[in-house]
Length: 310
Image 1: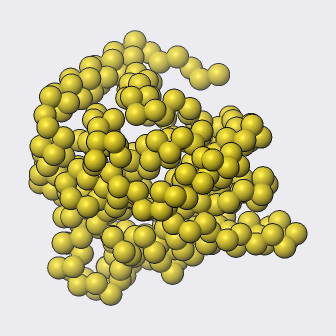
Image 2 (image 1 turned 180 degrees about the vertical axis):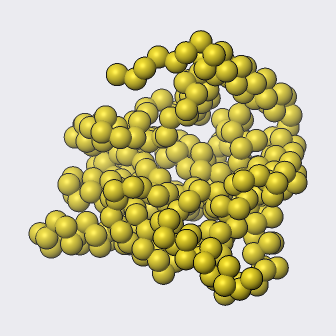
């Protein structure tokens, strides 16, 4: 059982939550494209001044070692613009729907087939463009689906995030960790689908190649698909113009079912990483570069290489 916060921590959390409410309310007063554009401008200007910029810069160097400095700088500027749009669009994600005309779905017939069939699938994706748009497309298709999420450190902000997601139909949450894993297993046993992001570092996960380097990757999506004989259904989100998007329902990732559980699991995780890498290469400015995806050894090697060039 977690220790309750002290009075100063609780006060800080409440002040942060008030600020969150204030900012969200102000953004919802703006037209959607204005809010999105404001986020792009602010993050493009201020993002390079943050500590996260250094993380993104190192990631880009690891992913694209042959790029020129000018190419990397252009990508970093574009990714800050996209990230700012995504953050400022969050308070109005309920407006980013197919019904509003802001979202088109390529491969919608596949979602319709899943909804009609009633057979659970494991949706897998990454933090592309505005990743909140993907669960909207799944739920609008009439698919009952558990959506995983990482709880915010501030419990008051976390509650508000849940409430805002409920505006666009996301009411089923499976927190990550042991409890979340049990919830996902229970959900699939009931015939419900699950959706997971699989592009961030997962300590204790399986090692699989990503941009020619081994990275720790969560095996959960592949593990669930193999256990329940379900399809591993990849999806991605592309920003087409401003606060308008295309959700792509890709062909299912074929899984090996040889009977060698460890080998089949490893092969599936490698295919998921290959899918994510392909999407990043297609639209690099729309990926979430500001997290440490690679292991510490990769960053240490990069730092040593930079010192050697100095």
